[in-house]
Amino acid sequence: MITTCLFATVLFAQSASWTPLFTGKNLDGWSIVNGDASTWCAKDNMLVTTGKPIGVIRTDKMYENFILELDWRHMVKNGNAGLFVWSDPIPAKGVPFTRSIEVQIMDGKELDWYTTHGDIFSIWGAKMTPDRPHPLGDHVQRCLPSERRSKPAPEWNHYIVTCIDGTIKLNVNGKVVSGGFDVSPRKGYICFEAEGTPAQFKNIRIKELPNAIPEVPADEIANEAIGFHTLFNGLNLTGWTTEDTTAWSAGGNVLFCKKESGVLTTANTHDAYELMFDYKYNDALSTAYIVVNGDKTELPKGEIGTWSRFTIQGEGATIGLGGSDTNFTNIFARNLKTDE
Image 1 (cartoon, rainbow, N blue to C red):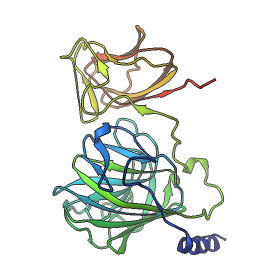
Image 2 (cartoon, rainbow, N blue to C red):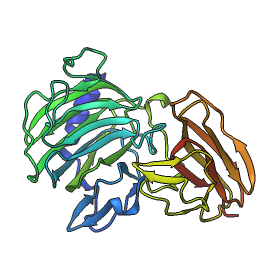
Image 3 (tube, one colour):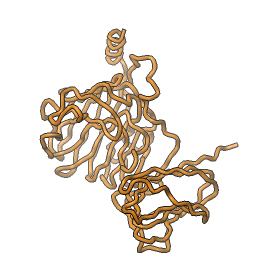
Image 4 (cartoon, rainbow, N blue to C red):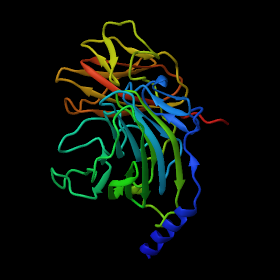
């Protein structure tokens, strides 16, 4: 039965039509997940990233079975970026990356355990069995390419990524070189990743395919987007206010509060909202708290040096963060108010 369904999927793929996944003119159909609005733009029919800060842009729609085709290039030597498939809509705890399968888009770096020629690997809780065992052992869920075909910066490279029922294959410049199977999640968003250096993408199109398996189990579907948007641009304190300007700094997607810092408050008030953020105590004497309309709540201590995630709901509030020797990241909010 499965063989018959897969055969039908292949036949359908031959007749299915391609759809542009990027207009070339604007970011319609895409959402900047984290980072700054300036990190991504449409220019000269290309999706362009400055690479800073590290973060992702994702499709507004989930995809299950599809063929994705695109061209990419780095603008500097040793550039780094990425393509995520079957992704969650927001980052995993404490990092700027989402749970997903990453298709490597990197230039010039070569080691025994990874390459820049089309590695495929699971990140931040996703699961995958690589087509070939990794040199470091079966515990490494990363497929190294069978041959090295990527062109160096600033030349263009062509990718065809085929994702069908939890199996992924990557074609680099005309030949399939890497892949994996038993992927989970196997339905989710498609993301491009900014990772420190400028990169460009073009001719991004998708061919959606039918599902060989009637219904994907719920635990194999990525989390659904529910309206969270970032309150922190990853670069500076824009959108926040504080009277203690020497206590706070920002960079690399992290807010740093020094010992006995003053409160850092959102510049705008929020109607009915849900706030979610990650925080980390750096030593046993660290403190962290949230202040909502003047009401202060201490954050659970957790394990020192380990990120924790905290959520809170409220209405008509300014939101403040504070503490001593504590870091904050992944600060998201969503509006809970519904029109009557």
